Length: 263
Ligand SMILES: Cc1cc2nc3c(=O)[nH]c(=O)nc-3n(C[C@H](O)[C@H](O)[C@H](O)COP(=O)(O)OP(=O)(O)OC[C@H]3O[C@@H](n4cnc5c(N)ncnc54)[C@H](O)[C@@H]3O)c2cc1C
Ligand code: FES
Image (cartoon, rainbow, N blue to C red; front, side, top):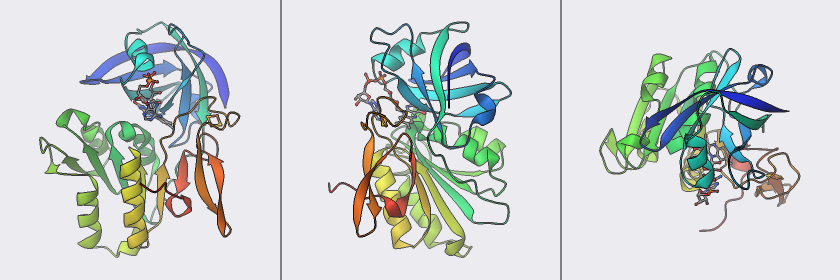
């Protein structure tokens, strides 16, 4: 984990309210593992003290990138920044995904919206290729479809409004794959990043079919480095449970360990 002032190499709109931001970070880039995140201080922002967490999307040479959606004042200000301007980042942070070994389990990646950002590095670094299930409300929420296909992954798309791929939730094609698989389903391992209801549904599918699953939990964060306890979730421990920090013990957790809030 390093704290650095880094320079923006490029910023491009991906689609609608999604942006790709490339940062020059020569000593951070080689340390990054799939599923880790960067905690970003947006220097031009009033109240810039509070950092924002973003999954690390891609790593190329001495740069890394994030893929983000504008949802509030921090991301709005970030989207107006240009090449040559500076940000402060602490990265890489958190406990990421386990990369599947060649000949090992077949990874099924499940992503909702900007959850795709956490998945690309995992797919790229996994010698064992699999299927990525991408979901979103509308067509514009389906990110990186071509990029996953270009690195040899099969991509299945679901949109809630039916404007692209299958109509419905992303867990539908996932469930269909597991139920109708030509492989032994015991060979599958699930990996997911997206909104909490989607993570919970993927965790339930994993439990029902007795499949291993790693879930990247999306909790609000303050310090990002394990000090403030803003980001804790309940995790099974012995006969009971304990709090663990999403920023340090996570964001990726074994689905079997998570104690879900009753909804
Ligand atoms: C580990 C981790 C990785 C993340 N990776 C990405 C990513 O790759 N791309 C991306 O676009 N976003 C990602 N996020 C969410 C991102 O951090 C928030 O969208 C961002 O902090 C919002 O900042 P803001 O100032 O624009 O919004 P604010 O003005 O602070 O809030 C605007 C709205 O966004 C909501 N919000 C704030 N933080 C979160 C959060 N953590 N999850 C869900 N909603 C939130 C608020 O409740 C509010 O409704 C990630 C979050 C975590 C915890
Ligand atoms: S965000 Fe402060 S402990 Fe996790």
